[in-house]
Image (cartoon, rainbow, N blue to C red; front, side):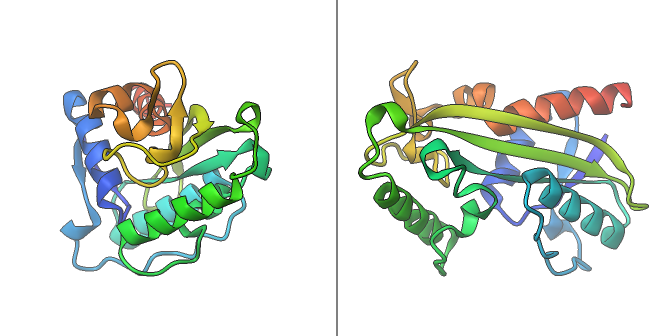
Length: 202
């Protein structure tokens, strides 16, 4: 089976490829195409809504089955923020790493006075597979629970990984080995659900 993962994020592409490789699914990237359209406007108010927009837009434009996802961090003390605005939370420009650093800095500032017992948070990942005719082939959602740390820790992962503290292992998501992260992450959960639904044809 072959599928196109419609993302411009190289970190997400690498994660999805490594997780699907054992299943024999070949994951193509947008870089494999010369006629890639501009990114569609993601103006939905849910992760699923944005993932559907991307999956349908790229599948139609490229005339291939496409996988798209939308993911982000939901923090209890911030009423679910940054949520669907996670990638552009700080409004910073520059490289992806620079934007990640600005987002993390803003989140730490927003959480500075929040007590330890009220720092619950979770990553959310919504995945959608669409065909060129706009039909949704499969969709799934995964969650990755933890608490917001007082400072960034770890050099692995990307995005808010250095700030999601996992009490059961006494580490942040950025301190986990890749296989450990895949086993418990929001993206790993969503992808495993999606794979089972694709295989059985749901």
